[in-house]
Image (tube, rainbow, N blue to C red; front, side, top):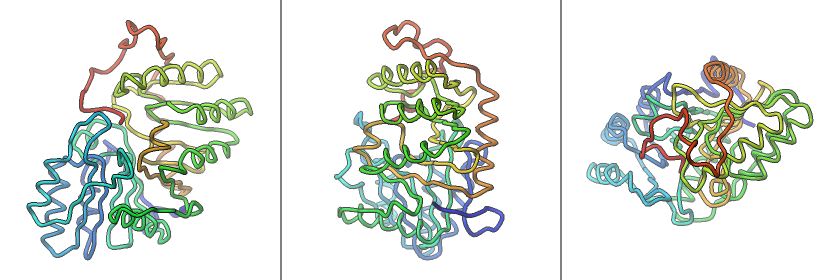
Length: 335
């Protein structure tokens, strides 16, 4: 597990969206002096693109990998790809080994890595609840670099699972389940999507052994038509099992956060979703850095207090699926 405290300035820092906004990401990119690697599902922020252009202009070796299209076929990154290419930045589409690369990572100078739940697009800096962890732990940073290099060269990547990073596809379901199984008193989940029977069973098993389980979901918002049945049914099963379920208020929920006993957290790009575990390139991080976990606890409690109890609608009754929901946004989909 990656360890550290933010006050030391050496180990970890938590970014919270929309509270912190785009500036910490810009500052992180601006700190690069020699090399910068960026792998991203969605890159549309003019400010981030300008920061990349400036880094390239001051002699930083910038390499960018962008996901070519969503599972639905949308090509959100074509404009960013063309812009980067026109500036002379080394840019490539992500590995064809994965139908979607959903990872959101940036590595600066082989010394620091940002692992995030948010895309590099303006709405994720202003409208959504999201998180990112900047880690300076050498082993974790090197493994993010190794993952980048293997995907860049289209070669197989076999990560060391003992250092606190969580990788798809192959390992993340088991890693997430193992984290959930460690909970003794409290288990807090802030996730939008619930489409995996293994994780559902683990959450119910935690409740049955006396753990107080809270789930903060996003309701229907951003859930695709083919995932809404599983998500609603899973949320209903959790409620029937005694799990407290609430729906996020005021902000769009895009975060993927699990807090265990207020002592550790799992933050990453992967939804609780079969394709996220089995098919896609995803990346998350386990952390017990005290100030990172404390801020996760503070944000979860704030969002929980602002929310209300939620019983998901009957998945087979579409007439009630929109009750209390945020207005639909075709560009906000949990891919």
